[in-house]
Length: 536
Ligand code: C2O
Image 1 (cartoon, rainbow, N blue to C red):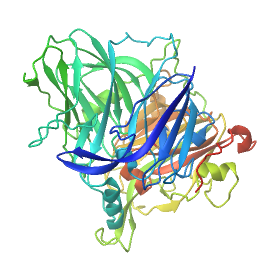
Image 2: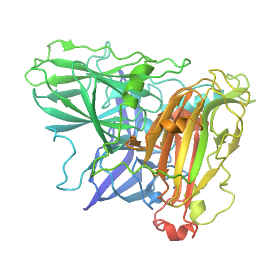
Image 3: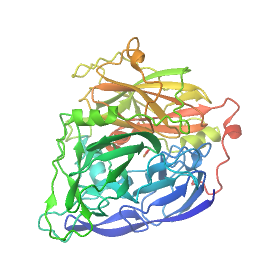
Image 4: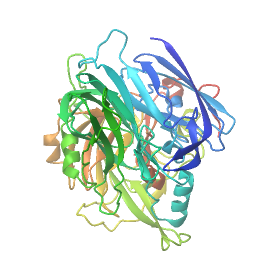
């Protein structure tokens, strides 16, 4: 293993997309940002220098950060933000992980343009558990707004209404050929007939789950969220914001151009978005003006296509990579994840009410001091540890909302003892409308042991749990009007954020934190904070 040094200059850059230019916040002037490479066991040091007018922080999404919560990145959870003109060195070691992850800004809506790939190669000399690809290609899916994204969310918060959806989706920064703006071609993926490629697909979008497919070619999924899975061959994948998928594709045609499409998956009846980003798979030797073989992406509400992908994923669970699913459980938790409406006298457009989101009816209020600092230095009054382990009201998903639509505000964490095992059922409830929530847990991977539609039944549903080879992830979609059950070992002391990775729902309060404590005090279980840790 070795030490890898990176420097991230956070700078504003004028960028042109969809035929118009605007200044965006970037890392090193790039959109998407630079790819960070490391090997399993490497120590990674990233010096982030803030040259913009916003506070910033960077999250290494999916990196376990064993005892190094100070480098996790969510603003006001594990660190105060890096203020304009300041810098901070993120310092972490990659332990027991290999595959594709992503890094992104974890403050405001800066993630829209501040994101990139994190590629973790296996230890030197350790092969992949699948045939070595001819080449590897990072494929980052994201969104583009014509207006400033901070203005988009601020406007929505003022009105109480939902923010606008993006103006386009992007594949490696481009949407594909746009009418009357033909100078902006899409991303081109060159291939040679007969060769196999590894696509490292990342969804970095703020607010959209996406389908991804390539005309005339099948994808063999070999890894998700930097954990190996049993290879499965499909023509369409679904990927939520924060998730990553490694897929092999064999260029098994002789020549030609084939459409690559990324289109929204949203089965909520209230949201509409049919923007498709396109790119081209281009066989070497094919003329530039040759016709492109097209494909029709699934419709926005193609729940069956999404379910087919999700339910076909299994941990590789080989001798070398066993699935270590916790079999006895110390903490059994049931959390509802919901959208709701609270009173807001100043919200004129929202008719005196505003959209909110909650976990177990608690709408998380961001603190002004980082929770991890409050925990480590024993600063009182920042957060409480009375987050409810069960819904305070009886929920009943019937397609219409229950009567408890008003949520409580709070900055609450749930306390887990160090090395305890946790089973957490996440239940979507339809307060405004059911919606698929991709929930991300910081600091841990978890096993997705169960999933269903309707109300979770604690008496019968556990009988169908997969405790042998469930997929292991860090971000999971809670199906609309349904539930998922996850299990993990709380082997990482610190404060760990959990939230919906649809940024609009995070902003509305669908977030909470776990406090993992070994009972002998934080100074014994965490490394001390680095001297350059930003102060609030
Ligand atoms: Cu990728 Cu807390 O986020």
